[in-house]
Length: 347
Image (tube, rainbow, N blue to C red):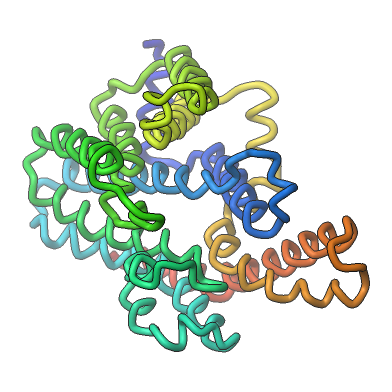
């Protein structure tokens, strides 16, 4: 490894990687397109996979934070590190989330009103499994439930496990999800169980472990991982074997993207990811994810201007909902998320 590559790999553990904000932006825009655009405008592209990229990214960031804190503060009681971690994560996630739940209640979303306890306790994924249908307006909250459940369970496991067993725990989490899809998953909503997503989080955790061990793949290998996993993912419809490991292939693809971002992205892709529009979108991506389905409620107004089912109605509805989501997300980031984020300095 060259000195330049080594210094970048080490320094990324201590600084913000702007390319990841660019990937965040692309991921959330894909999810928004999936929810806001009519089905015929999806063009057989899995826009919803942005959600799974967020799982991999969360696995990477959370694991890197925990590994770093535990390795660099060996004299600090582990439970104190865990408590500080949970408090900091809560300050980052809960204010915006509870504001979104409040919006759902104000809009009289039936699931939020009737099953308010499930949303307050971050069990929306289990609620959806119980209902066997997507709750209107808040269907996407299932991912937030899984994120919180992962933060708690994974942080406890990492804090309690000796450092030499971390890689084993990561591989086990990946194996659990893979095995569940092969032999345990049944029904339309069985993928909403938290253990069904563990390979995504595990793939991100594996990147964090490799980075801490200074074993991160070089840029050429990162590119190879990305392209091979993407080609196999695209070819999944032509192979029973590939179809069975579709989600794991996307987890590998996402992990490759994160590895490449750590190593350094150059050329047109770097310019795109670091464009001010994508950087801003990545900064408020959490809010965009939270609020975009609520913004979609407002698109009925476009029905007064354009004929039902027309191109202009669909286009204007997407643009109106997107602009509204950006506006709400900006307000949320500026006046709700940022003030609570500043409190993290105390922990």
